[in-house]
Image 1 (tube, rainbow, N blue to C red):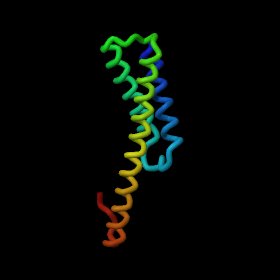
Image 2 (cartoon, one colour; image 1 turned 30 degrees about the horizontal axis):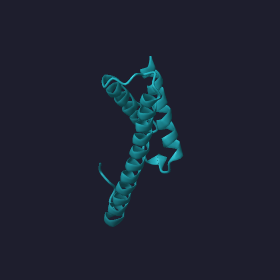
Image 3 (cartoon, rainbow, N blue to C red; image 1 turned 60 degrees about the vertical axis):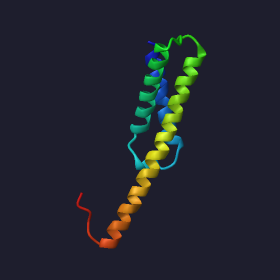
Image 4 (cartoon, helix red, strand yellow; image 1 turned 135 degrees about the vertical axis):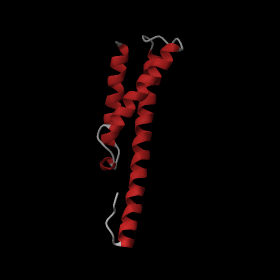
Length: 102
């Protein structure tokens, strides 16, 4: 049951990261929340396998912190990559004057 709650927390952190950071128009609306949810689930399960108890605060803090860090990092990296790629494509299209075919 705790995995469900922590997964919801990861999704919320991903949503906050998506809308708090700039250049959100460069990627889909579900990408960053999905990354937050995935990271929180993997970290939670790994820490429980290592013997961390769900009723201690450390597992919650580490897990949600990892999800927040992963969400922010993914958002910034994807945004930067897409902005650069769009700039290269614009430069190519302006240079050739031809529509891009794929």
